[in-house]
Length: 268
Image (cartoon, rainbow, N blue to C red; front, side, top):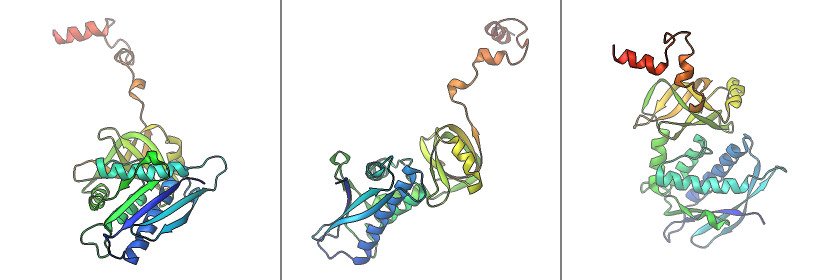
C-alpha cells in the first residue's frame, strides 16, 4: 500500500467541535491539493486524494492516501515531504518552500487558526505525520497563523524589481510563480496575467529580474509583485571581467595596460 499522510486532531478531552473538525480536514485536504498542483505543475493536480480511515477515539486521526493519475511519475511522497517540511520551516524559521503558493499558505493559516485562544471552534492539537517515519511529526501552533499572516500581509507598495531564480509556476488558484530573492533569500510571490504565461515558462529555472508593482512586509522585504516584465539576468560568472570591459571602448586606455592607466589616474 502507498504511504499515507495523517492529520491528528484533539481538543483536550472535550468533544471536538464538528465544525472545527470538518474545517480542519477540508483545509488539510486543500493543502495537499495545492502542493500537488505546484509539484506536478498542473493546475488540475495529478493525485486523487482519499481518506482510508478515521480513528474515532481521542485524539482523532484521519489517514489520507494519494492515488497518482500519472503513469510516468508519482508525486505523492514528494507532496508528503513538502507538506511536513514546509509547515515545519514556517513554524521554526519563517521560511517558505517554493511549492507553497499563497493559496496553500492561506489554508495552513486557516488550519492553524483553529488553535487560537479566541477561536470559537477551538482545537488544542493539530499534528501531521506520514508512514515515512524519516519525515517525523510536525505540530501546528497558534503562532503559525500569525507568522503566515505577516508573510502574506504587505505593508509598503512601490514600483520596483527583484532578482533571483524563477521556479514553481502555479496556475491552480491563479497565475503566479516564485522568485527566490537574492538579498533576503526569501521567496517572492509574482502574479502575472495569463497572456504572460509563455514568457514565464521560457524563464523557468533561470536567473531573472522581475519588475512591476512590489508589495513589501513590515521589514521592507518584498513579498509580492504584480509582474510587468521579466528580463534574463546573467549569473555573476557571465558578467564581463574588467579586462573584457576595457575592450568595449577602443583605445580607452590610450594603449597602456588597464593597471597602468588606473595608477596614472590615481597619481594625477
